[in-house]
Image (cartoon, rainbow, N blue to C red; front, side):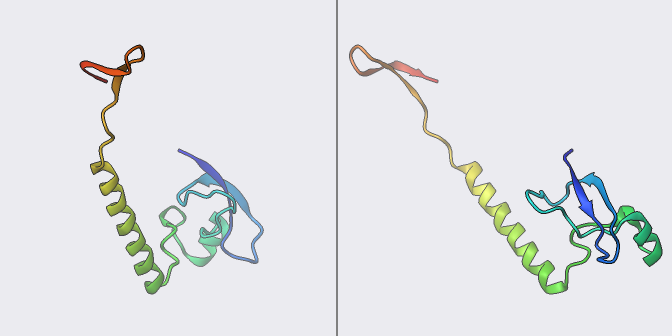
Amino acid sequence: MIYVMHFCRNKKCTNGWIDKDLTDARVNPPDWKYCRECAEKFGIDYDAQTPDINLSKKELQHKNKLRERLKIAREKQKKIKSPETVKIDFMTLTPYPSQTI
C-alpha cells in the first residue's frame, strides 16, 4: 500500500495527515477527504469516505466512462502478443533451426 499526505477538504481547517493513496497522487496532495475532526463535526463517517463521494452526477458519469475506456484498452493490450524471439547464429546470420525463446 502506498501512503500520501492528505489535507482536509474543509478549507477553513488546517489539518493534514498521512493516509492511503486511493487516487494515485503524483504531485498535488489530495484534498477530497475530511479530517476526523471535521468528519465528526459534519456527521460524516470518516472511514467511509471515497474519492468519488463528492463528485456530481455528471462528473461521476464522466469518470465511469473514462474507467470503462481504460478497461477496454487494457483488455486490448492483453490480447496483443509480442512476436517470438528467435536465436540467430551470428556467424551465418541465420536462425538456429526450430529454436525459439
